[in-house]
Amino acid sequence: MEGPVPRRGNPQTKRENLYSVLVEVTAAIRRRTGSEKLALQLRDELLTIETVSFVVLDDRAAKEASEIAAKTGLRGMDALVIQVSKEFET
Image (cartoon, rainbow, N blue to C red; front, side):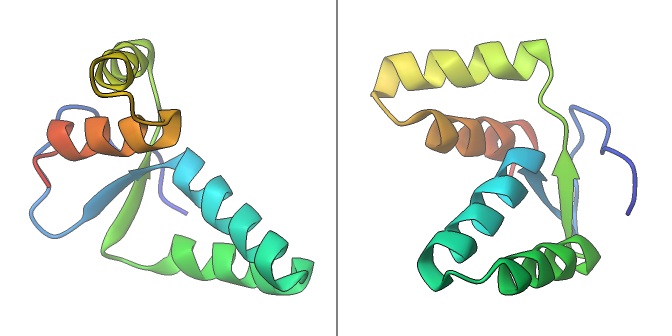
């Protein structure tokens, strides 16, 4: 697995996601299927997709996401995804 992507980039071929997205997807697969094995297989598969990279949530990004949540009334995870999308212009 590659290291965290630098902040404030403008990727042309990769889609940026927070590591929390990886946790959310893994947990959702486990809850819906009841299969720990399938959830972990999917997690591992997501980590190998070359056009998807994961970023670390820092203080600045967390503050921006919380402002998005306060302004829009979105759930926290949705606000985080929007913050990353705005930051990386995707």
